Length: 282
Image (cartoon, rainbow, N blue to C red; front, side, top):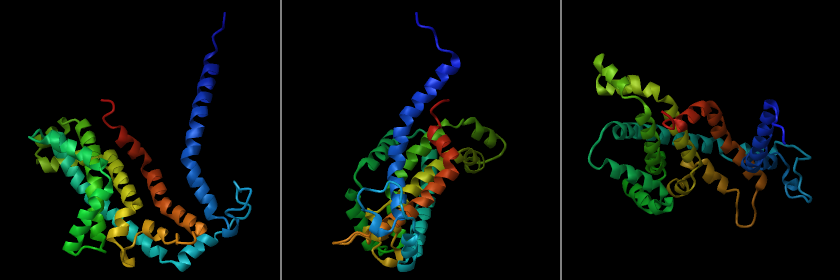
């Protein structure tokens, strides 16, 4: 007859099984970025030596120095930052007001519009590329920050509305009613009571819009071809020519592009997790 394991032994076995399952997932997730980081600090001549070096035998910052000395990388970085922040602010303003209406009011067509917002992000972005390009050309917004901010908002807002609607619906309506009894208008109750409570959901939505806008390439390549408004993803593409690929500079640029998103995620991780899990239990 088999004897039952002590509680401590069962706990150690559970932890071992969890780590056994988690380690491959972690390696698959972090592996490409770690390889990119390794490539960025290697001399160009040693990147493709055989056998492959899993740890760099020589470490250099030459790729990063060349990146900033030979290119207008600070300018591209500023362009990406302006566009991502502008898209985040515009997306938040529209998605917060829309999602509040969907969460608190029952009106004709509500279900239809919510379904429409869910379906729109499923379409390939290339389908709306041509109409948006034509609109920007007619309105004279080509090669401006506004063209990218409006374009990014067109496909980030629908999903953002879904995220914020679920979060607002999970907040008790009694909070607003109490504020209105104390003399607040509906707008005052929304701004003074609901928004401070919804910070985790707003942070998660802002992070989603910022990441999508920061990494977007297709619209940036079509709508902002002028170097004055060129963003980082488009600038990195110039390291790939018809005959050569400058892998060292490309990897260094990839690392720098990733840093703002990583730092933002570290700062907002608690709010992000709280925002994404809001409404799961009540």
